[in-house]
Image (cartoon, rainbow, N blue to C red; front, side, top):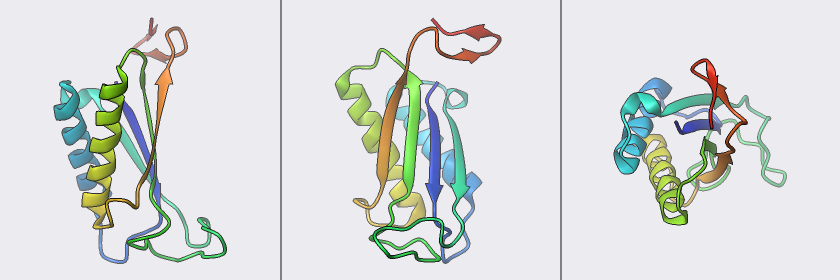
Amino acid sequence: MPIIQIRSLPRAEPFDTSVALARICRELASAIGVEEPEVWATWETLPAGRYVEGSAAPVEQPRETHPPLVRIQAAGGRSPEEIARVLRVVGDAVAATMGIEPGNVFVHYEELGAGRVFTGGEILR
């Protein structure tokens, strides 16, 4: 049950976040061998002036700066190699869907500990 949360500046060109999110979920599900509905994702577009890198505060998503900020939360138990694959797949998919440089995406992975998540009517163990 990986959950992907993306925050970025708005794109200059028209951009359908639902199409982008579906692609990212599909690619991650395929990479880790789970069904697509097991991967959840949200996208928040940050208003102009709400994302500053140094003193630069662009109104649109640059290709080479102000990386989209991606947070992945998932149940614990994955190996370091699996986590690396998750980070790479999601980072590459975000860059591809946004049309930005592949190195201009920041992705952070967090493990959700047993007994610390409530979903589907129960606490995950």
